[in-house]
Image (cartoon, rainbow, N blue to C red):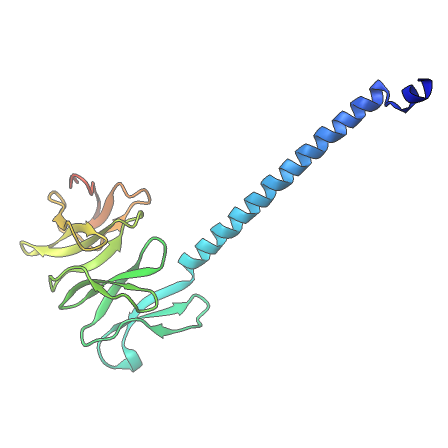
Length: 202
């Protein structure tokens, strides 16, 4: 009996063992959280790289012909022509995730295309539509269209439906969305005007 009792840890030893166990569990939990955080950071960095990697611009192929869209890596490598055709392609803008481009085809309307040049789709048929810009949530596109002799802001769905003029918006230059998507900003007569995309109030 005495030999058995001597093999049991003392009260002090039991407390030390308990503290060590708790400490190890917190260390394991902390390591797991850190690994998860690093994993999310890598995913976030990868997504950021996707949206920031390319520059898209309009230029004349070989210095001749109508302007078309090109893409190039931010390092200057990987130059590739995205669009072709007999009408100029101008005013490109990225989708929020950076995989698609919306642009104006002068004399034809507004189009959407994948970054690699596939999936070309016409969104509007007004030959003077211009300056399209995607909303931050990717659901809508703001653009300019002539109305009573001036350029005014219109919106539509990302698929080209539900087109509407923002009725109280003044004559405008190229629109841009606020980061939260709750307002559209436009240059107008030397000022910057904020328009509610839902009500059209300026």
